[in-house]
Length: 130
Image 1 (cartoon, rainbow, N blue to C red):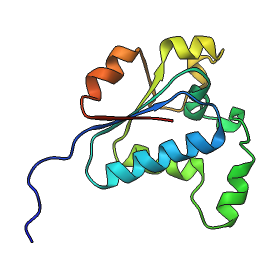
Image 2 (spheres, one colour):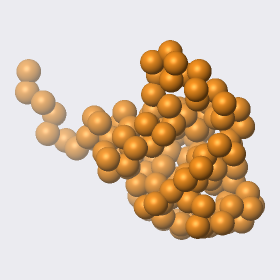
Image 3 (cartoon, one colour):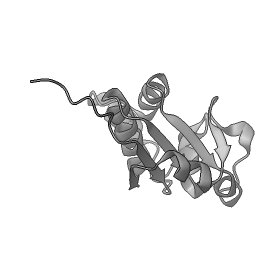
Image 4 (cartoon, helix red, strand yellow):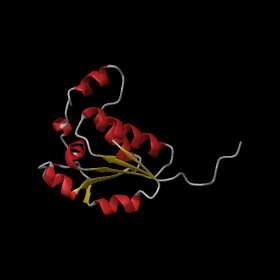
């Protein structure tokens, strides 16, 4: 069966929550979609910006990561690395950083700081909210 030559629709992931479970799954979706060849933009705002910090331990229930890794499930660190290697665009909302009292220097290397317009311009396909 020949493959469909139509490029997959871009995927925008909007992370507004600072809960570990939602942040973890945002990266599962981002890495999975990028591995399938989709263009992916993950836009974090408010408490969700904690997931884009170099030290993401400020997420609610961040201690769950160790338990998942013990069960053979990739943790946030591995998923973030995979997403970045697969070309996922990571954006921290400029206003969201201020709301969550996060300094730009605390962000993971390569994370862009921009507004919602940058996210919407990139995400003209499907958008998921977590």
